[in-house]
Every structure is written in structure tokens, then in C-alpha cells.
Image (tube, rainbow, N blue to C red; front, side, top):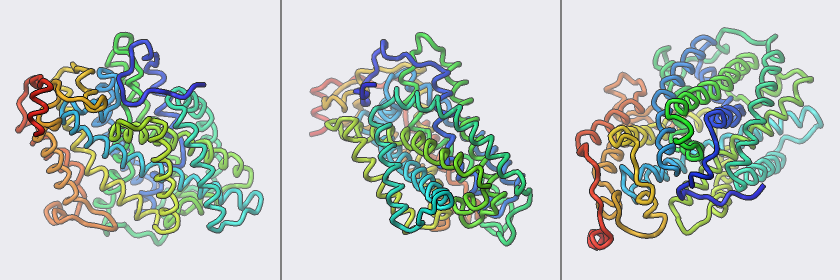
Length: 473
């Protein structure tokens, strides 16, 4: 199979051969991994019982899918990734906001997947063959997982699609066997001596809905376009693509997350997930668990790394997608080592997802408002101005930026960060929300409202190259 040559350029119609079923496969197969499963452990670590954990995860995921799924329709129309597509609203240079947000999201989730998958691999190999569990073993396993991930990401979309289709079947079988394996130990009660993380039920439940539920779909706000740009709107309707996105995200996220809640309660894993999961596993399930940790991690991290390569390619147009992928792979692997040797899992995960959700939500809301305003009509050539190292076009605005859209995002993100509550940081607006983290709601509402008010609902004016040059001088 040849290495994919496309970066963030416009995909020609002849190459847009994927369909809604492929979209479901890639969203399902890539998410059936420990990097997503571990989010089901978060509510248990917060002190919630089975039903509180399930309701918070399901509620957060459904809300998140309702917000993020329409983003898939943007790249269906533009034939490029979402960060580049957002140049229609932020400007061809202002769309770097989306590239940076996407890069950070993918970086964190790639590192998390390799981290958790590697820890489970080391634990299972220790029980199976007596592998030492020290730092050297973790380093070797992390490196091997990262290498497999790089191969999948560099080869690109076609290989990742085939891998996702295989994982959709294989991982479903492995998780179904896992339900049986842990059935004897599961309980509906909270893990003993695990108090509510925020002191009482409802604030903790809401934190779980955001950190464990909503964060899953939000992780895809810049990723969905990586897949739908290969779907032709001439052959597949927007409604079918939207249905496929909703189905893929709901099933692909809820199945592994709820499996994580189920196994966390069975393993009584309040302070850690990987160690208790392996310790509570019956001996006969260790090999399936090892397969799930290996294959699932490569599939999920491969897609995240693929997206990171596209985002870095968008930031640095002179870089090829393959080279950009190798660079971000090295950075992600470094974060894995940092996470294992210098951080607490619950604290790191909770802080990461809450902060990135607050920053990413206003970008997603602004992009959706812009998409609705333009009726899904774009100028693909004008979107590629920055990538082609030229100037001008309908999306040039002011020196390649739309100042009001960028300011709306920045203010929305700032308000969200001021209202966030993490184990490492609490924003000043928490006093106004009763200590409840409403950061994603505040950031989305403020950013979206400002954009709607500050920007006129009319088509942007085409800026010629000479005008664009003058605007930058």
C-alpha cells in the first residue's frame, strides 16, 4: 500500500471514494481502545457508583455528539481538513487557531493512549512471562507502541481505515469476552473509601459528565474532517453523513467508556486503572487483554497521530505530512514518558480534558455558526491560499486574519478557563457558578454570541493580491 501523499490540500473528487459506512467503521474501530476505556474509570475515581457513573457518561457524551457531529459536514463540502476549512471564518491565517487546538487535543490523547496501553501491556506481560515492571520495561513497551503508531499514521488514511474496520470487529469481541471475565467481581456500589471528588454528589456528577462524557466528542472537533473530506457530497447526502457521524461517535465512545466503568468497579480501581485491571483479570483473559492493549492502542493513537501530522502540516506548509507526522510522534512519545514518570493519572487526565474543552468549544461553535451562515458553500481554492504561500482571495480578510472572529474565540476561551475547576487549577468564576465547572458552556456561549454579534451575516469580500499585500504593510 503506497504512503498517502495528501496533506491539507483539497482532495480531488476522483479520490473521494469513502462513504458513511467507512465513517462509522473508523469512528468505532479507532475508539475501542484503552485510551478511551480509561475515561470510564474517571467517574469511579471521582467517588461515583455504577448508575451515577453511567448516567453522567451517557449524558455528557450525548450532549457532546449533538454539538460536534455537525462539524463533519464542513469538510464534506470543502474537501480539506477542519482546521483549514475554518479559514472561511477565521481567515486563511487565522485558521491556525484551529490547527493549534487540534494539535494540542491530538497530542494529549495520543500520549494518553500510549501511556495507558503501555501500562496494561507491561502489567499483563509481568503476569504472563514475569517481565520486570520497572522503568526500563515501560520505556521499551512505550517505544514499541509508538513505532507501530508511526507506521500506521505515516501510511495514512487508507491503511488506518482498513485497520479500523478490523478493530471494529476484533475489539468488540475482546471487550465482550472481558465483560464475562470481570462479571464475578463487578458491583454497583462506589469503591469503598472513595469520597466525592468535589465534596458532594451533583458537582462531582457534573464534573464526570464533562471530564468523562463530553470530552470524548470534543476530542473530535478538529478530527472529523480528516475522514469526511474523503466522502463525496455528490454521492452521499449530508443527512447520511450526519447520521453516520452520530452513530459512530455514540457507539464508538459509549461502548469503551462504559466498559471502563464496569471493569473499574470490578477491579475496585479508585486510585489507578491499569494496575487493578490487570490484577483483577482471570488468567485466561490475560492474552485477550494484551491483544486489546496492543492493537487498540496502535489503532487509536495512529489516527490521532495522523491528525497531528495534518495540523502541523497546516501550520508549516513547507513540511510534508510524513515529516510532520514523525516530528509530532517524537513529541507525543516524550509526553508519554512525562505522564508515566512525573504525573498522577487522574489529575493529569482531568486537568487536560477540562482545559482543552474550554479552549476548543468556542472554536467549534464559531465554525458551526459560520457554516450555517454560508449554507455550506465554500471557495476551496481560496481556503488554500496560506498553504500555497500566496495572498488574497475571499478569505483573506485583514492580513489573512478575521480579527473579530479570532477575538470572539479568544474571549470565549478566556472566560472558559476562568470558569474551569481542575485538581491543579480553579478559575475565579467558580464563585459565581457555585463551584460547579460550567467552563465549556460559558466558553461556547460567550464565543458564539460575540461572533454572531460582531460579524455581519453576509458573504466576505474578495480581496485581490495587491490589496492583501497593502494590508500587511
